[in-house]
Image: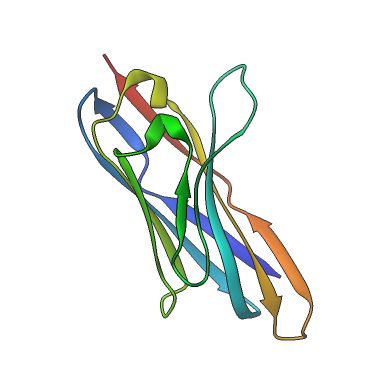
Length: 120
């Protein structure tokens, strides 16, 4: 099994910054695409940022220019640097990733989520 654990959420004022981290552990041979999603109360889960194994990134339009996704393959980590935060960024943020485990089986996992609250 592969586990993903997020950290770094919290309460911040509008205009502030937070950096989320997600650590992958377990029977990992490869990590392919890593993603950050978010889910606000009463809304569907939304894909926020994606980073491929080669480092290509994509973002939902609402965060472009403010959020940056990055990864450290050696540490099996993915990060989300969030700047110029807005109250509408308030949500639970989830890490998601997929790859191949040491038994040559594909895996896909979700973290438990970390709360980000932006006050106006």
